[in-house]
Amino acid sequence: MDRFNATMDKILSVSHEEMQRRIGAYKKQAAKNPNKRGPKPKAKRS
Image (cartoon, rainbow, N blue to C red):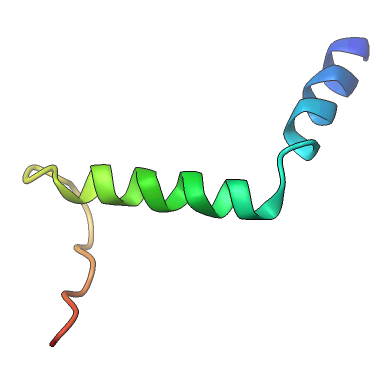
């Protein structure tokens, strides 16, 4: 139970802004993979 509590404390200590930044960075890196499986993200029209 102590390991679970320690892990949850680490997860919850990260701010929402930091999580959004990490997710955005991962999505940019993942979008560069031409062999991605599954649905492709929509391209933005400009």
